[in-house]
Image (cartoon, rainbow, N blue to C red; front, side, top):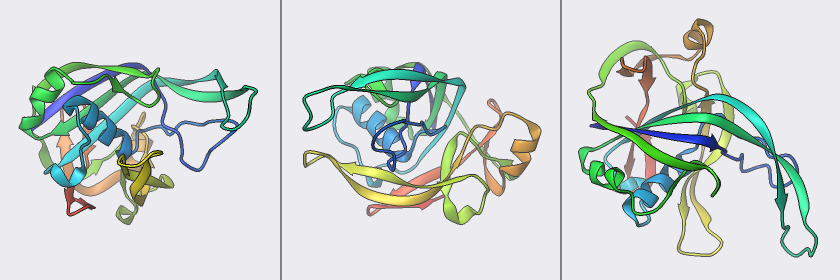
Length: 217
């Protein structure tokens, strides 16, 4: 297994239910953003059903609000909205070894959200995760069935890019878990058993895609 460390100055992950007006950001990327990163690195549309496993941990140093001019569809005039952005971000991707070559030299630009949220690969390392009991999880989304407290939201898993505009191929309910910043939050987000990355001191929830259905591992 490899761990790919990706950095960006800004990031934004819009909740799909917010279509206009103020645009809040999710504290962590959905799986569909991870699909976009993998596709950009490989240079072709990637499906999770083609990947043995995938895990990720995201954290940022803060959050701010940006003012953005937009061009609404079907309207000649422009509009101005407020959009939340995450600042000084790190994303750790946990992938099979064969993905090393794609992140050494990504085919297309990596993004953490919008086209302005440019990301770069900081480091690629071999890593061995240890399975432990009572592990804190965070900086990711986990299946709702785990029963952990957090933000519950229906999020896209994969997009179908064969049509314009793109359409969600898979949608599911997840619990959004921000990266824990203190002992109380770590205790609240502790799960009975999971893999653990001792170097960044957090549990890693791995997903494996089988026949178009996202399953937990």
